[in-house]
Length: 495
Image 1 (cartoon, rainbow, N blue to C red):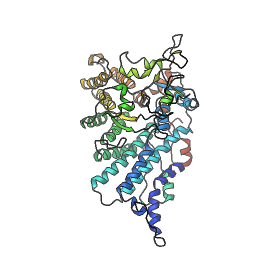
Image 2 (image 1 turned 30 degrees about the vertical axis):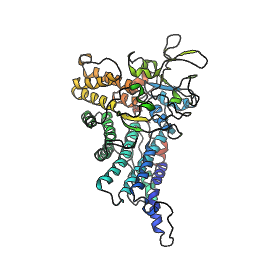
Image 3 (image 1 turned 180 degrees about the vertical axis):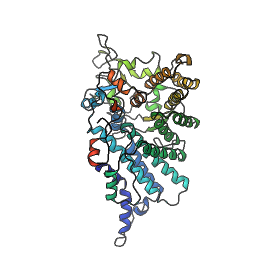
Image 4 (image 1 turned 135 degrees about the vertical axis):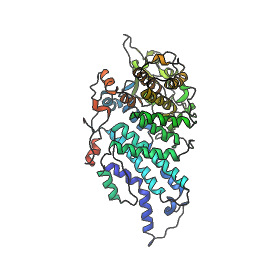
């Protein structure tokens, strides 16, 4: 993997720099004009924190990475939403129609992005081993953040591709050795992959704080959240339930009262978000979802952008909401356009579905500039913990009062009637209802694909929409670009 190994080498530039500086002291003495001596910078906690900041930055799924990962790869292939129009239509079409090729640039970009973050996290771990003057708890906190970044990156790779190569760089590795590791490491077995990621997340959970000291930094809850999701999607119901309970027992998280404001810039100070990426209305740090969601001619502020690429919600999905469901209020179903014409988005004039409802879940940022809005992007939140626990308990015990109570916490926040055990008397009926409830709770958040896969409905759902989806397409192909540079990589079946 030439590109991968380049990313690893970039992450290790600091180590090479340290080595180079120390080797040239015999013939060069350089005065230090900055606060830090380069020889000492990476031995100082602030230096390692700078490396951590870089690792976080590489791992962030924001801006166009958010558009690609969340929507093109994980929602447009489902029964929730799709895209038409603009230059994006040709890029999105293969994911909507289940015709993606093995040399797809979006998939290759996600592969490279996550391995770049993993490389940076590995660099932090190597440098942390050289730190002096810190307590074991301080060192473990640094290691915990690095291992969290590494594990969450592997989680996203697994969600797309299944098990991938586990890349570890031994201390003191030369550039040629790094190159060989990147080009020769085969895919891990599922057991090896899970053990590795679980080990990282358990270590992080043990050594990270409960409180989010800075927005977007790893916490105990975030590590447990990814661990919970890993177990959930693997249908390890006992461990998914137990891990969800650990998050609940922290006593730190709760549902935000106002769902309609939860994803707005005004609702960001809440205890529901377990892990998120901080965004700013600034290029490179933005949430650019809304520029794709505004319908044509929609009256927006002069400072906002409205793209030709249109993110559209299926009418059938919109109709799964009860009329008084507060979550439904974040959909635009009709409007008066700039010419004064009334535009209706649910049905066409002949009564057929228009499939053109718009999700305004990331409510427009009043201070947004162009495509750049400052809404933080949420990866894991407390509602997912409650619904995970409800699903796992149903799979373990069948319909039970605790699952119903957890579901009703989420439904009550949405302002809709509670359900009872008698409404869903069998495991199968409650299972289907939980899947439906997850759809209504997590639309526009990119969770639908993994939920449908777990419930065995991803392929059949695509087929019902007229696509020639095949069973093997529950995983994406290993990008051809990676196979070409690493002969030890094995392709996913079917491709």
